[in-house]
Image (cartoon, rainbow, N blue to C red):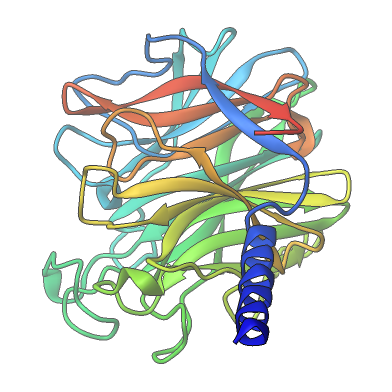
Length: 346
């Protein structure tokens, strides 16, 4: 009897130890600290949801944001370019991604931007939404059925001036990644592109799924390409799958370690605590381990919330990293500024 109890306790100890390791990988933790109660970016009465921002060599911030007229969804958005010297006062520059012509992959909408700025060129990755089959606006339809909103990733490129700011208009390079065939894990829809450059290789992370009504099937995908050729090759399987599903992988690299802030769905359809941002780490960008399950609970009542890293040139984090966080105020989606703080303990 005593021996049996010892064996059971031993197994319990090993089980608990293994599970503890799943949530304590690495010794770097991050916290988001709100910079001000005042929204950093406010388009009232219109609104934004996702955005991407970088600081050029002259210290100017460039924001590329979904622009949605009041009460319209992100699949109807266009992407606008704004600039600022302080991240609070913004000047509209231009609309950089508009709806394409009928039949084009972004004929219905352009949204979910990710910006990558180099000394020579500015690369704008975004999700393009096609017009639904038959004109039906049912976003829940399965692929191949009437009403399906297809979504693929499109790249637009602008020349950079001497300070690394966009010079002239963005020209559409074309579709760089699209959903898989029916039956593939990413056949339904893809969204939330995030690009990390290492040398001449672009690493593209995104969320995708094959059944829109089953949020457990929203998982993280990966593709890579040479920046000289821009021909992306998909990794054949999801690189991260979590219970309940998740979306919006936000990835960056420090030294040899990769970091991903990832929005976990607890109950996607509940506005009361139906999501939670968690922090994952990796040594190769493919195999991920949960490092901090309590990273961030989101701002206000945005549904779903989003966080957007602010980059420097060539995709580097700022010396004092900052993040834009989507939130809701008076039923209008806005962006708040947060500071990203690093510590060795939580």
